[in-house]
Length: 189
Picture 1 (cartoon, helix red, strand yellow):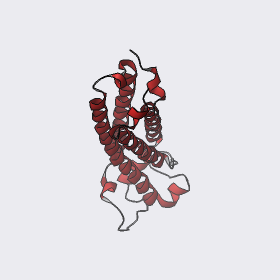
Picture 2 (cartoon, helix red, strand yellow):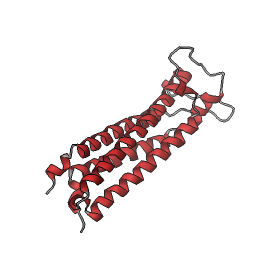
Picture 3 (cartoon, helix red, strand yellow):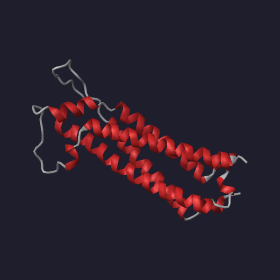
């Protein structure tokens, strides 16, 4: 029995929104260049701020943050995608164990939201570190001369990835709330 109506149900729409946000975050973090962040990490001659607002997150390597963000986003995307199609193919909403399965998926949604929140905070710190340490060159998008050819930083990609991550976190928390409160059961046909 295939549940084709799941895709237009409350939970199906939540899954589609989550998949869209995860895709947007993944594309944004792929576009964000780690080269500029690595330049900031390794070069001491760039204008650095001596403010006390620098956090511990600034010490994490930019390439590590990018790889972790890509790994977390693609893993959660694949799990959400599999969950969506499993709900459609196996018609879980009409099975006896729906409430237990829905509670397990709700707990997974909370775990996904926490993982996305943590990595989004790290990506936001990556963007902030580049903004603070490159100051005028970064904000005005001007050319930086390096030992390699001159480069031009791409501003905002890491911030966009963090924004997509924060939005996906909220979407997963909303799905968890829907599942814990069994709101989708009341709309079910």
